[in-house]
Image (cartoon, rainbow, N blue to C red; front, side, top):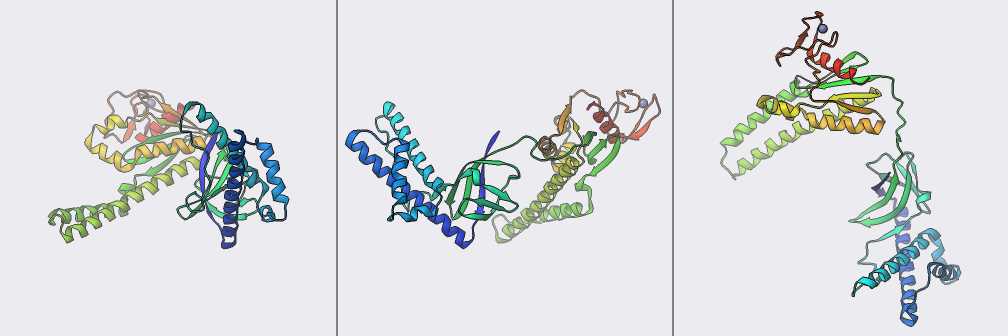
Amino acid sequence: MYEAIVIRLFPTKSQAKLLWQNVGTARWTWNWGLSIQKKSYSENEKIFDINELKRKFTEIRNSEEFKWLQEVSRQVEANVLIDLDKAYRNFFRRLKTEKNAGLPKFKSKWKSIPSFCTRSEKVRVYENLIYLEKIGRVRFKAQENLENVKFYNARVKFENGKWLLKCAIEVLPNKSKIILRDLKMGIDVGVKSLAVISCGGHKRVFKNINRNHKMKRLNRQLRHHQRILARKQKSSKNHLKEKCKVQNIYGRIKRKRHEYIQQIARKIINMRPKVIVLEDLNIRGMMKNRHLARAIAEQNLYLLRKLIERKATEAGIKVKFADRFYPSSKMCSNCGHVKKDLKLSERIYKCPTCGKIIDRDFNAALNLERLAY
Ligand SMILES: [Zn+2]
């Protein structure tokens, strides 16, 4: 599987100088090749084939006059000629169907986006540095984990004042070398607690962050300022000021919730089970209840599920979903008895058959874990 990615480069001053030199040489090579092909085409309606063109280029590269061409990687220049050849072939193909097929154009120092192809096979990553041929190790930032990946079609560009490396990487399956434990996990997500987990029969609870002290205080502040805002005259200065405050607090709450969900998803994956079983959430059913709907939205339950699913897949953990009709809450995890009329308010599951008394959510998590087998 291939993925196109963009890496931001932070070259030093001397590295930036080298990058510009590459850009300049690539542009010069393109324009040189283009003028030769244009001349040939106007004289006998033919262009040189790529190998002839390369031979001609090598000749001038070795000459005294153009010795500076040797300062950049031969591969950079060869890639330009290959690009030019492609451009011409596209032109000839279009010529058959279109009247106004445009010829390849000269590159201008001012109008063209500065770019060049670097040698992909030589690209290597060393922690926060990325090696580019004849440039050296450049500081970089990337969204992706670049450990043990292969690079293809690496092209350096200068766009909007930023140096970028655009390339394709081959995503190797199981690139993260996480060793999974021989454990299954059931996750019951809910309103009272964010998630109750059974992992190999052991219980773990992740709290609902909206119920903690700090979040309650933030929510109080939010409501307070919302009330003030409602009293201010619209589009007055004070209205605007108050609106800023409200948005500010709201943003903080949202960020906190978001961070929390990320953190919990990470913690769950770090337990490294082989299989995770989730409910095929009755979120939709729960959303019909207005009180619940708000609680679910506040808890980002959808996001949690999505993150768990994605991170698990990346780590090579299998994710299973219990179907909608699986009675994970209503069934006794001890004897399998199904309680038909379990109310939402019953926080403790009391089994009438075997007498088991157990926390309702943990009982559900245990039942979900069982589905992994
Ligand atoms: Zn029972």
